[in-house]
Length: 77
Image 1 (cartoon, helix red, strand yellow):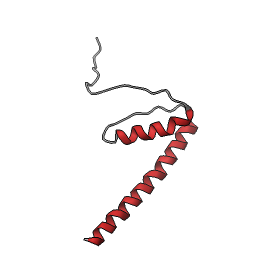
Image 2 (image 1 turned 30 degrees about the horizontal axis):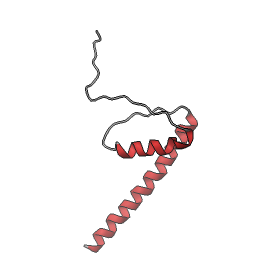
Image 3 (image 1 turned 90 degrees about the horizontal axis):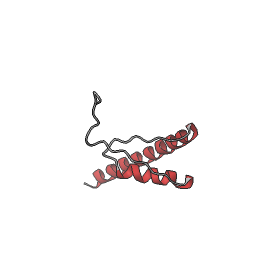
Image 4 (image 1 turned 135 degrees about the horizontal axis):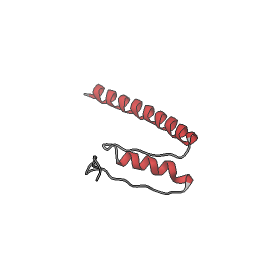
């Protein structure tokens, strides 16, 4: 018997997909699990770098868009 126990809410799952679908599936998973902690394993450093930069760019674009929209809404009020 182990000294440590696995938390009750911890779930493990994986998806095998075609290479051309990987980014789309990862993006949809992240969007549908925003309020949960997730750990994603990626097979190569090149893929990690690509996904990181794409996510960073998208995050900045969305942050800018939502800040502009909220600013415009405040101007209307």
